[in-house]
Length: 418
Image (cartoon, rainbow, N blue to C red; front, side, top):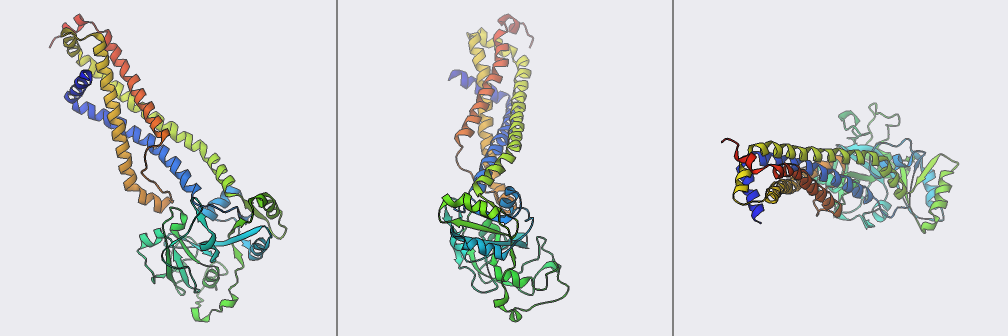
């Protein structure tokens, strides 16, 4: 304890240098733990987005691409699938339920998803958690809409407000279906998934707003809600179908049947396997980020080593006085090591605090822009291990100047002029 008290007093006398060293270590630790936390929480966020869905069916494509646009609203479909194909899948004896979805439109930067009542009944996320309503109810009328919690929060919407959908993902004035506004009838409870950033409408409504847009643009034709015959709004094409089976034993058989579907080229994927492939594609980037953050930690510790070595020559008289009053070479060694450990420990604590403050500030932006739910939480076992490695590395770095001080003789210190 006496050595540690002496080390604290010594660091107080070199306050500016010590604070700069702590700051350097803190930044490197914040980056190291931040990269690890973003990596793990990104995986958790992706894995919790969909649950209880056995197959996802879309146009012929890679399974990662199909997963990204159908579940995470990232990217676009290579093609649509015919509505009759979706009906054939629904009628298959092994299918318990299916959720057709149609993508392609947007509202002020948020994706619009066309679907049916089955979406609110069967869609699950997390650990098979069902969607719940914070306010209101599912859409019933043709131009009713249900919005996610993030849409309501960011745009300040409430029940009864009107929503104008835009054609495509670029919400520009000329691309808006402003002649057919929607009315908000429901706001979903937060889920921490892309559902929070989606505007949900019925499939017939998707058909209705695109009357006159068959060529991909509207050349002046305006359709009023009163002129639309709801009975004629049968979907022609959709983007994908989420499928739940009566028994998971039938998954592979149905997947093979769909992949060999003769009416049109389709792809059926299992979400879990597609996620595993996605993590495989991202593993190189993950490892690269961890290596870079590791080198930053090494740079921070080398900065501390440089600081200790530089100050050591200035403290040779201090070491000599300590030896003169009875301190042994081992005490001098422990003093230098204690200073390095204290600097490293303070840097670790400061780095964790800085990281949590940054998470608090940037988590709303990251959630709205990238759909990644960052949370505080306690440090995981792996994160504790990383911090322990940093602390041990700080001890090893401290041994270098400590050994030099250990080897300095008493006479060498006493002959230095003041």
